[in-house]
Image 1 (cartoon, helix red, strand yellow):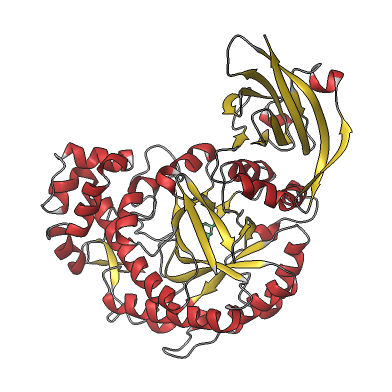
Image 2 (cartoon, rainbow, N blue to C red):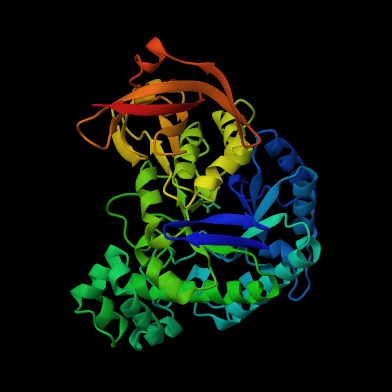
Length: 504
Ligand code: DGJ
């Protein structure tokens, strides 16, 4: 049984009761379209200590003719993963892939009458099948159900496939909303009571952007979309209908085989970007509540983080107990830093995109090796507020964090341009005064929480982890600990365990 055990501020992925962290990578979009490629990719990625690959599953290959299925890429992916002791998350490239319907089979693409398109300008069809197209939704759900049935039949016992991403970066591009006739009718109709009821029930915990939009209009509990959400109506409306489409597909598949599912978001890439510059209605943090109300089958929503504001996006996607799952991130050496930060924020999956572009020697390789050997220690701390992640995003940054009986201050060692990998670390408390710290390019000092006392290292060991066990290798002191006052992580990835005490 694969579940996400949720707690107040996130969750833990469990496989038959045993915790797991996906140290992942997402393949290029067309890397799993040939059986030979699939075998080659898994072989290469295992060498990088990746334990889970996020693999596209293309509707056009799965159902080339309506009602006729070809599961060869699906079966091959599962076999290739198993042969190397790896896990899989399938990415269902169905009706929406980057908000476009380019992965639909030819019989869908070419029949624009049966599978009518969204309209970004009234009267002009776009490249996306409309989320108001019931026929497309039913066909997508039927194909996804067939996929889930096949996974259940071939994998229920071995549980190679851990999760499903339903569609990919869904939403509507180049317009704030769909203007096809069916969408126009829905937009003029009263907003659904299921949504309003959800908002009323969760009024004190709504995403601030949505709470503000609703509040600005007087927190109406009835009316059409514009009356209730004012200038945000287009995006909230699209979020409801896109999420409802995804829900229909996800629920049909999950009834066949029950494993966790999620939807991923194309984020707002900078100031001045409005709905339609990014997929309007997609699972952005600001409309997380709309997605929760419309798509209860999904366990979480997930950000694809390509922006330099990695920390902010993690904060937004851990609101209200949403477990952190990062299906796409930059695959540059930065990934070795963002991986540490994400796991410090208790991510259940971290996965750079285009992972098949990286090769041995990339700093992610040693980072994943260390994290893989730490999984029991890390997952033991998940849900207990015993972990903190640190990440350098600019020159000369400082961070504070309270852990155990101490307030820690971390400062960056170098300017970003001078680091092989930006400063990043995980700090984990074993007790009030004993800690693990792993990472690079940061220096920590500490102060007891009681202000009249001074903190000092009792001892500090540098070491390593092997299959969940700590292996001390050398005691550090003197210059290497600023004479008992600091924990110094240099440019090379390192792991230390230390004990503090305080005196008055
Ligand atoms: C985000 C998408 O989700 C991926 O499938 C891929 O198209 C990347 N963008 C390309 O950068």
